[in-house]
Image (cartoon, rainbow, N blue to C red; front, side):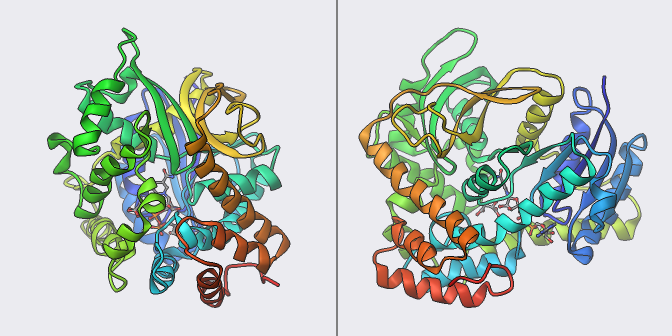
Length: 441
Ligand code: NAD
Ligand code: LMR
């Protein structure tokens, strides 16, 4: 089997160690020759890189491992770039959450004004990675799961239409894992789904058991209408914040009860509820920093000091195997059916052909072949029209340096009540993002 050379961009990410363990656990179908980490923050990456070097030496000495901040070194001779960068890091994520909240609006990583602010930072960072890949490894593919995926994907469509970049999100995968549990299946791979929407903004319209064709929607509808996506056998594995998100899916479902919703609709359909349940002094970033970041970096430092990872508490990032599914689909032409963020081009018949939509695709060596999802109902379409306009206006604002387009984008979001509030949020976001955004005039 062909061995692959992979660079993980955003090497200093809190997700990196468990993704590396996942890659090692999948070597049976996706063998590695070389694994490199790349980041533009040497200090942050070294924490992760030093520990991962020990893990690699102990568990996969046959794989050449290194970490670097030099793009040439990182991107030369690779088959895949797996990208999970966070431009502005947690310091800026925190402001994305807190600035909108100050004006009574949803403050969230990818939804609402905060997500738009993050988008304005991410576009340049991701485009830069594509340029490095195309310069140093023109035949490579980028598997991008840097957020906000919807805005990043639209920027790729506009500015890098011929680049080999696939945008994918783990949220549908995570929800499908729960659905499988609810239906008593061993794995989400026993299900075949139909789905339409935008990233963090979509619905499952059909879910059947692959081997028998059994319709699983009645079981799921019954369950979600009572418990959301919560199930006793998975509740123990999530923090309180996620618990409430999965539970709220019940109320999200009620307004469009034919389909199973993505959990992110909580932010768009219940913005008042979200704001009243937020603490501006302790948002999701603070939880992640006190939780995942402390845990991961603490464990990295411990491994480095001990000089061994034999007793490491890092676990294989199990649900991230979708990244290997995608890499294998391309490398081995598996024709796997996966949800990807791709140009609509008529797949949703009554929707903007130029929208970046999240839909099932058959993935092979030439990339994704989207499936036709047909016509969608007016309610769902209306919500999507508004949200896709937000995403396109943000990309316009970035390309044109347009204050007006960004103001319109924030105004357009369901999470913002008025033009006036949109302006206040925008002006404060501009001030906070001076180092990262293009100048808006
Ligand atoms: P993190 O801050 O821990 O790590 C991100 C790393 O990216 C940092 O080390 C930072 O220095 C680096 N970085 C920032 N700008 C860069 C640039 N221009 N070039 C190279 N490196 C750069 O963040 P995290 O919480 O681990 O999240 C990483 C990313 O993955 C985020 O975009 C997050 O939203 C995304 N994510 C995506 C999914 C998905 O499936 N779509 C799931 C979880 C997280
Ligand atoms: C995170 O945990 O940082 C994100 O991936 C999603 C979130 O808001 O929890």
